[in-house]
Length: 442
Image (cartoon, rainbow, N blue to C red; front, side, top):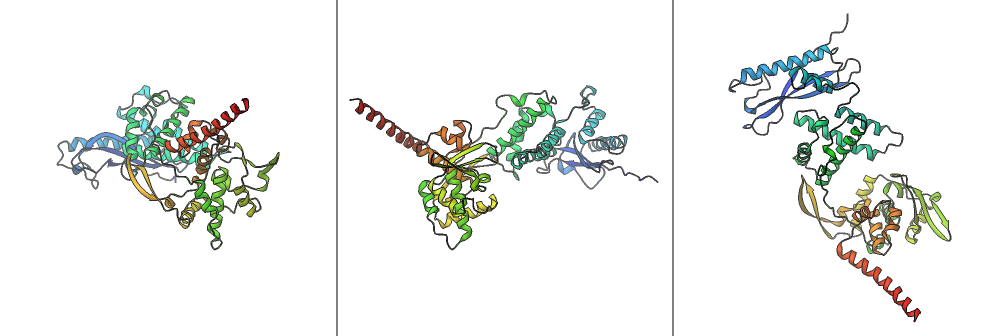
């Protein structure tokens, strides 16, 4: 006897319960399982109907209570929509239909979608395309977790946003109204994301739409217009000066081998300009010597770019301690925790005034410098310190990997006063050579 498939019953929910006095959207929620694959599917579909929450009862079949003036006809419309959903489920081999196709069919049967809006064969609706695109990036032979993770995070936000708004996003939805609403949604309580985080999420949405356009799925180009973006706020960049690096270098940590190793790892980053993923893997094979100059030569993990770095005395002394290898690596997360302990021992406890964005609003907060310790400070300190020492940006960019001077100057911590001092120092050297040249001519 064939297995009998139970037809799921639809549910109707309110989009929001925040204000009992204001109307909110009613959404249909339909869950089912594909018989062929076992895939669990959840449909959230906007009914287009609204009701004040105080007239809504989740416990009864007739959701809208009698106190509502139009309760009878509104309940009838909801029940009709529920029957339509069950009918679609049956008509497609008891659930052999994707979420997007299900919603498209609901739109056709209820008159919300015209027949000429039926998706052509081979066309991928936006959310299906993004799922596919993220999976492609995740499974590429040279896939990097940091790259596909941000894509997955953005996809998760889009799913949650769609659910909250009671509609499935498709290409025609990405206009300026979406841009403004999605940004505000990211700022709302529970999420409270920063302006720069919202900017990153929207830029990834643009990436999705660019790729969908390239593959022929999308023709709506509003996302490419000027203004369809969120301007980033400048963030404060915390670095350690050469003097502070000297304090760390000379710190006696003979009684704390863990912090001794943490200190050495961090200083390798400060004197090499390498990222964490690179400064933890230096080995004797990476050290070369040409014309009497010792250097570190390697290909970076993130960009597979060759970098060649002079082996400075401080860096050489640290590496010699470990037979010219990086100390035994720990995770970046643990290193960040231990660095705070290290900075505290070094008495880097000066107050730092920070501006940060919470829910799109700027707030000021005071932190101790040791509380801000992170492994990435090493690379930024390298770029800032050696630029202030007079090394041209173009030379440092060959080590840091920045492709433009604009990127480089946004990366380093250089205020206007520091910049004026750097220019004055370089001018002094140039003028001295200039004057010496004139003296020799005489």
